[in-house]
Image (cartoon, rainbow, N blue to C red; front, side, top):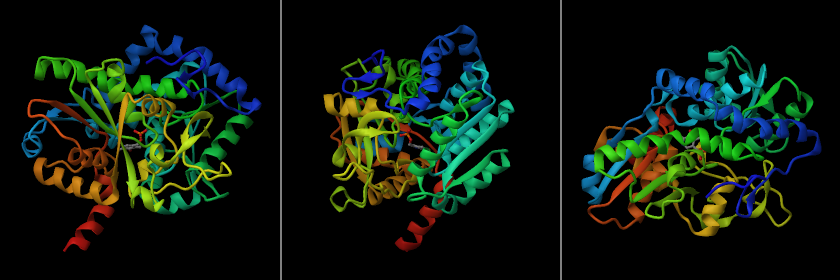
Length: 393
Ligand SMILES: *Cc1c(COP(=O)(O)O)cnc(C)c1O
């Protein structure tokens, strides 16, 4: 399941960009593969993943969870990475690429602030200027992450147009890139955006399934599992967990979207369920839009899954049937987060809790090996978890 030279997975992908961005995107497209496949790059990338991020992350056999579902469940512990999620794998990769392309100024957009924090972190590490665009409403909702970005030395610029959320921040970042084509690098946080971003981000995140192969070999005597379950916002943690198994038909790839209050209510972020084909963020994919082609606001309790599209790889996995797409509601995700905490002593991110909630929707055989990608830790979600606890009492 390779991307073609124009950046398409089947019908989806490509680079649908204004002419004024052509130079920037083309410069990246012409250079990215040669740079990231070089020995020099790979050495520095792998060294930082080990010494700075703390990789490899464990593939933990969750004994009590396995017993509950009567199958073998392994958790890929991306929550143990520096900054608490998988996002740092990608920002490390892209900052090394930006440096090799002599870019001095990094721009990014962020919704919940998680990608903004991961970007500000690597900019501090490399001593590069960092500007993060964020919707004015999101700045109010995500104060702790805004404080983190500022402490890390980033400038957080509010997007004040439209709905004042992620898509408006994206527009501002693109405007900035058009205005600063020479010294600026646009660091995208998921497998979205114009080609080559989806492919590049998937390659950086593929470290997840690369490690899984040797860890599964050691633990199960076989380098592939029967099923991999991962949540999908834009789709980067899932892309990384699926990457080395895309062409292995023995492995069922299960993507879990946020149903929000329920797909039927419209208060949802389940793009493959209610989305249609269109162009978002420079690529052709599935997205949530109205009959006039205007993007509709997604909803999920989990800020990281609250995105109105999916990356082109996932649109292709969905349409081709290679991927199994499930959904979990806010309620189901909360219950799954509580269950994991009680059974294994691990508080997951709300996003990852959606992947865990899918365990209730699958029929397992007793001897199957199942990997759940635990994309992040729950520290950032404590306010939501506490509110939930108070409601339960
Ligand atoms: C951002 C985020 C996600 C969703 O992004 P993907 O690109 O779909 O992986 C999932 N889990 C966590 C912990 C996140 O921070």
